[in-house]
Length: 218
Ligand code: DAT
Ligand code: MG
Image (tube, rainbow, N blue to C red):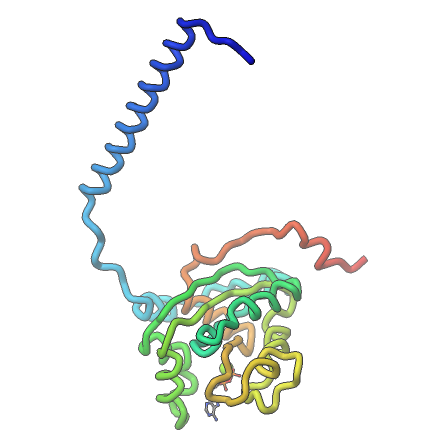
C-alpha cells in the first residue's frame, strides 16, 4: 500500500476542500443563475409547432439513399395500454431498422386532427380523433432501406381482420377501430409526418455498429 507523508496528506486534504468549495461555489452560481432566469411560459403547443412546420417546405429526410429512408410509426393508445410498446419496438429493431426518434406523448385532439387531416371527411374521423386522444401514444421514426413499404408490410392491413398472422395487426388486434399502430403509407407522407411530430433536433443521425452486418451487397 502506498504511504503518504503528512505534508502530502495535508496538501491533498486542502486541495480536496478547496476543490469541494470551488465545486460547491460553481454549483451555487449555476443554481443562482437558474433561479434568476424565469421559466419560459411561452412554450408553443405541439399543435402550434406542427402547424408552423407544415406551413414551410417539408424537410426531406429520406432523399439521400434508400437506406436513409425514414418512416413514421406510432403506437396508438390501445397499443400502449395493452403493454405492446416493447414487442412492437423489438420487431423493428430485430428487422434491422434503426430507431432515429422516439417520444411518448399525449398530443391532444388538435394535433391528431392535423395528423389525420386527409381523413377529415370520413364518417369515422371524429371517433378516430377521440380514440387517438384517449391516452398517450409512442411516436417514432425508423430508418432503413424501404422503411416505409416494409414498415407497412410489418404492420399488416388497416383492418386487422384482413391482416396476416405474423404482422403486427395480424398478431395483436381484432378490429379496425383498435388497430394499435400507425405507419406512414408513402415516403412523402412519412417525411410530412416526421416533421409534424418531431423537431429536426429530435431526430438522431447515428451509425449502429451492426450496420455492415445488416447491409451488404457482397
Ligand atoms: P392506415 O392506418 O392503415 O394507414 P388509414 O390511413 O386508411 O389506414 O386510416 C387511418 C386509421 O383510421 C386506421 O388505422 C383506423 C381508422 N380507420 C380507417 N378506416 C376505418 C373505418 N372504416 N372505420 C373505423 N376506423 C377506420
Ligand atoms: Mg394511413
